[in-house]
Image (tube, rainbow, N blue to C red; front, side, top):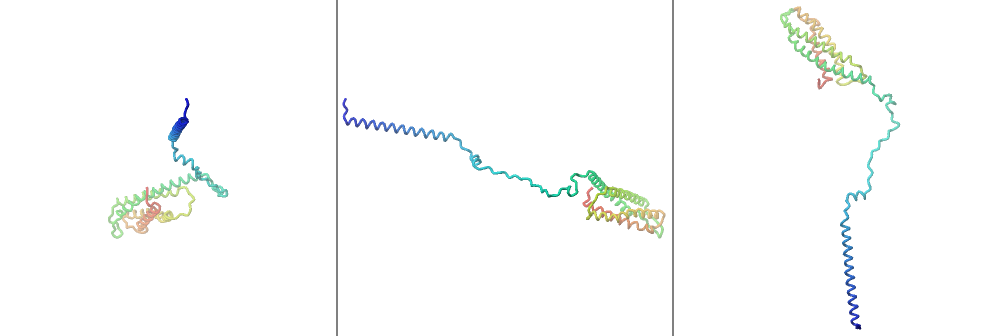
Length: 244
């Protein structure tokens, strides 16, 4: 069958149009598929943590480490100064005993104030009334109680002094302050503690013999009050505030 030239041209034009249409559709489908795959791939990837990324991007900083100071080789040691690094057991034992005995000394000193104060109070009833040189009255019982309390005071004072004297001697620097006052007052209350009972015994015998207190025995009260005042001041100098 013969085909006219016009028919051939229409056939070719139709074929060309059909080919271009199929090519466009195929290209569009290919583009859509690639976009879908790309979107799925991107959506499937997890987001990296920002802190982890920052840590990976930032180089770690070196930690500050304190280096031990180098010891000066020219620094003298204790052995160079004539001292021993090891403690002396004998000296430590003396220090411990010294401290313990002084604590007992302090406690006994405070306890001694009790009979001393009682002796001072009882002294008011130990005196007697006089008519000239003759004793006309007086309570002998109060006098006996006063003498007994004086004896207890002297005994307690002796025990207190023993623990201070018998304590091991420790080399000390120059004392000052309350301890210095405490030691100086020993020269006042120690002689007074010796003289007070002696003068008291003399006055006691004179009163019991019906005599008026006379002579050196009359200084018993003044010496006693001086002893009490100096002893109390010595305690306050080292024990204030007072703690038993």
